[in-house]
Length: 268
Image 1 (tube, rainbow, N blue to C red):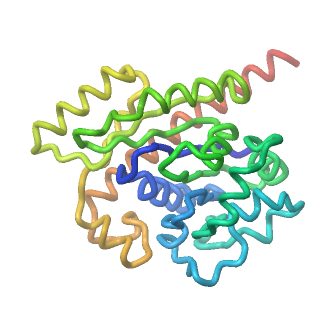
Image 2 (image 1 turned 180 degrees about the horizontal axis):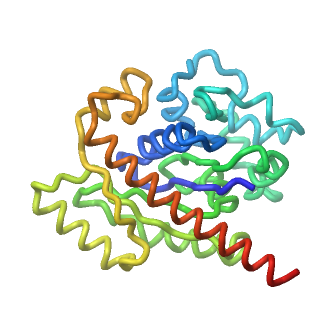
């Protein structure tokens, strides 16, 4: 059964999509059957993986509002071992999703349930807002990764985000785990070190991942080439960061699967 990681932050510009994209490629290259889901209507994850947004007829938002029986026809293979549920700007679909009243928050869970055994890991990129798509991604997740950039406004809105996560944990997803990731970090800037410390104090060190994604020019260059930075052999420092993050999350997932297997054997 696939482990599901949701990447979310109501603040834009924190590197959320870049992290989701590069981790998806890392998992796929390591042999994991990987599904990336783009729930952000800007479609940056889809574009970054090489999808032509102008040619899309089937999108993630259309899938959620139509509740079709077969999700497979919405998936695109973008790399070996890596499939994508793409998205693009579709105001009508977004409005219809927001307007749904009954069971709106579990639409994605229903769609993923029959295909979860086909994948080892599912990574979900969300819009920079607490909209219906984001709630769906949190309801279905095993873990939520909150990327926080090294800016003066990094912690703005975090209290509201945690309240939303707590409400979803209470009503739909009691086992949801939180991981906080420092992004766009410049070790030469004292402000960045101060913000990292503030993040650890706000969330508690146990929730903050050891891995740090530093600020690199190579990230933007890779995006322009429709590649992950881990696919750019020139960007070795950035690749090191994402590989370290991949290994840290993989280790956490392995431990979680071991705990789950042990609990099941006790209950038999």
